[in-house]
Image (cartoon, rainbow, N blue to C red; front, side, top):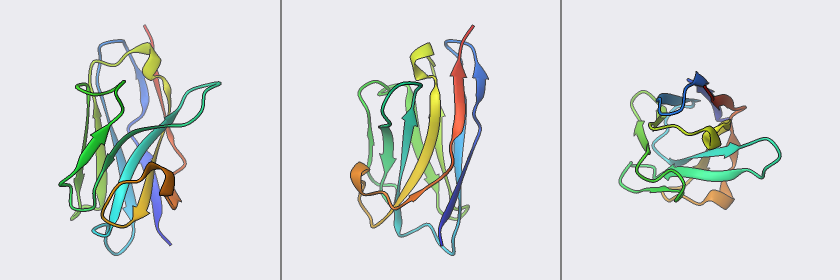
Length: 122
């Protein structure tokens, strides 16, 4: 069973940066596309970014384009989300999720982590 564990959340001031990590417990992560999602208080969960299984394709929500960067290291079985120029509206619980297959599909993620809280506040 694939398990995902997020880390790297915390409190940061507006304009600051954080790097989230999603570590997988599996023989290999090579066959999974990985997505980052977030859920703010009182709001629905939304897809933030996704990366294909080989890292060759990425996509981002309009709200984070130019500020967030997703990457992966399959040898370390870890996916990262570098978040720069953070805004208060980025405050949310961030989850990573995996889809067995090469391509990203936000609506077809079969494995989820438990999330890490990001708070952007002065």
